[in-house]
Image (cartoon, rainbow, N blue to C red; front, side, top):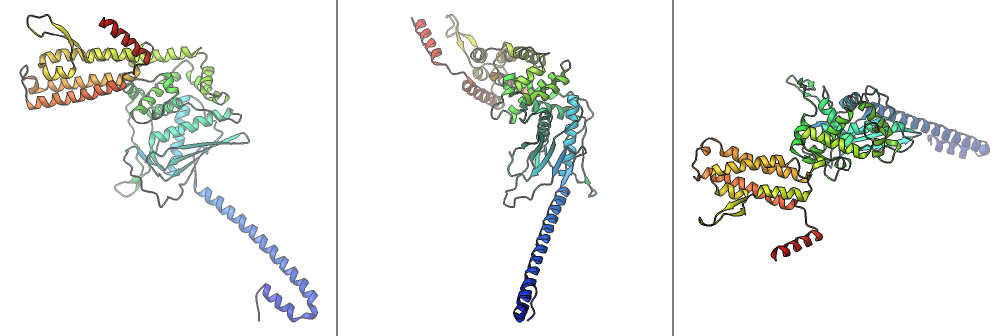
Length: 486
């Protein structure tokens, strides 16, 4: 029976016993030859597989125009992942081919802001992933091999445009700093990353992030880019933000607390950081000093020493730096951080305005007594003429008070002022203003109840923010009370 390969050879050796030795030798030669051919084929197959894999990797990679950024196609989506509902209007889908252009735009804007040329050394690989949750963050990984740094940025495939700019600014600053590194990666301060990112977003003449194209009315894929030709100062938004909310001190910028970069607190932080970066760059030779600061970051264990070394010509000591920042805030927001009251003194001044002392007569033939009255009582029980006179004074006092109260009470003072301003504005409308001195109407009563309800909420917030007395302070109060009682 005819067989193929090994079994056929075994059959032929059995039928020719007289040539057994010769046949066995031939058999061994054939087997060895077959194994050698198989091994060569396997090696060729492995080489082909490696070449195919590299060819596939190159076909799924998108290189930027300077070849510094390599954007990989996103991996396959997780079929078990729950879909994420996108609500924010500033969320963009990161198309790999367009992401390379966005990365280059951010780099060009950053180099222009710093006044330096493009001398990149480390490649930056960017990989997008299907988003699993709304608060999914960005991961930046740096690695060094033979004194050559490379970087990887992992992004959700859908994210807010400002966050993308911030991520690119951070990895670009890291790449710039690590060019002088001897194996230790630089520490990029948060205020520098956030401040530069906000400055680039608001000062760039073109959009830094390109959105994925969408079909137009004719069915073609079109990517729209809106440009506002009006030249608005990049610090306009920061001025409005820091006039409404207290600007941050250098200590608060240097050591942001948990959650300080989210929500309304995040806007205040980024506005303060932008102002700091803007002013540092505006110093004499400021761009060169900033570049020296970035280059010195990997040479020291913390960025504060690198900063003092780079800006030694402008700030001889840390105290000089703090004085400069305090004066800058005064001219920018009208608020002097070096001459503010303590929290205890601030609350004492707030109490004097919120609960004014008035003269009250219990009988016509008796001398008036001084007594505290709340804003709610003034609104609910006094006639509008007297109300308006007192409340207008309170609004002015609160406006002046905000420039000297402690940082944590500025928002509270502003909220009291806004509530009173809103009440007077509502009362001065049309038919409200024509009512009698103490005439009551359903509409007027409703306005008064709403305003007093808002004041009640602010009063509760004021008590929650009030500094707690220490045991020593409590003892002092008790001694003072006993002395007064005697």
